[in-house]
Length: 475
Image (cartoon, rainbow, N blue to C red):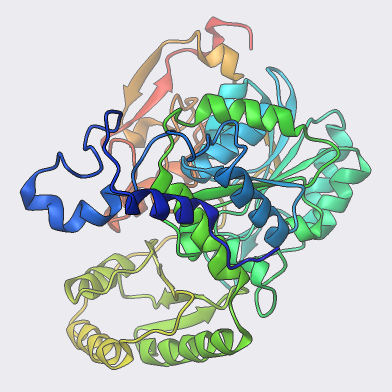
């Protein structure tokens, strides 16, 4: 197939060139009804923001340009079928869980998964069995579960309906997911993968292999994270004898809007073509640029730079005595915005094109380091004891939680209660405490430390909702 083709974009462009008259939604009427003060920024995209008029196809029953675009994507990503998502990887994660799991079904889930995975489990009513990630002292954070932990979980929960994994992690680190997939398939269990940060792995070396090529059954990718697609534009890929394409499609049409965004779908079309037609020369230029950016970021007195399995991810490991949040704030004051800040790490993501502002970045790094000379020491804690049980189930089922009353308690009083809400530092959106999990002293210590370090937690910062009395119902 000709991967230069972009059928959704092309049909939108052709229709726009006819200067159509709108007596249909959306209400901005191809940009004619729009405030003048914002028109200069929105005008071009509004002309492409159309609805399901003849010729534009229907995302939920595609037969024309959308169907052709999805076939082109399936050919490039080497899938049996690729669905376009306009609700982010969240929509794909929810759909793949709902398509494979029913209420009460056991599901083996990587503990440090995105909140959308946890929400999908709750919506399905499944009974999750969590496998804890290992702490990697080299990178200073929890990464992935071990294959031994998965093996033990499969041995004791052989009726599980799915294994759900995250690959790569937010920082671009990978692991032996191929071995895990083969292990799950030996038990005739499908593997669902949240690969939100790996759409560019399909380019091949020097990037790691994508999960689908390693045998995964369903893979969800955020095209907007690493490819030139608009925010929320994502893919769901299938290549499975275990999972029904029809069930995936059924739940996607339930979860996603009945009025999907054509600019988002066109950007998915364009992003696929961009990846599929990238030359080796361009990739060489990108990797040279990555090395130049790494050199520009060097500040050995203040942080070390760790490269990841994904060469586009560069992480500053802030040295003891400095605050990652304060360093990130200094960068932001200079107009440089990193992707993610934890208590002691700052993630920078290089794009799929050579970086053009290296000299400016060098000056900004010098400025940041100069301002850090009078920095005072900040306390640190060990975060290696958060996940004490390699294999863990919730203290309450989702069905039981729906029948219990909740109260709010201050964080420092939370240990021993069962959480009635997840506590989620964002980004990366991975729950520190799960809804239905017993809160430990280590959880509380980690939360209070993160708040002091300026890490943003999506929930309130003055306490946590818990269940008043877990003994009120039979779990």
